[in-house]
Length: 102
Image (cartoon, rainbow, N blue to C red; front, side, top):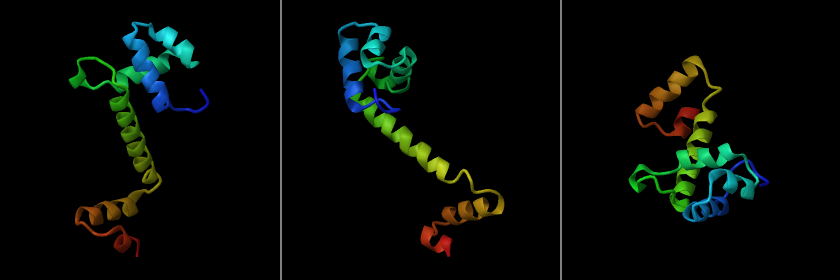
């Protein structure tokens, strides 16, 4: 696997191999990732509504949503003190970000 994150194709492959009753370790070997990567993927991205069944399309959506939230949170991580509180207060009053930036 080239990238840091599992791809939609990887998730589809995991779903298919789980359906074939293949072990997590074997799936990890086939994807050339650590077994913990496959285990974490299944744990994090299996919806409770699915009674423990892994669904690649739902998993992909959950992973993308989690990544977007993490990026959004990191954008404000370097803002400190009164500036951060000022922005939070203005956003609570529904001020436009363009108005806040002035």
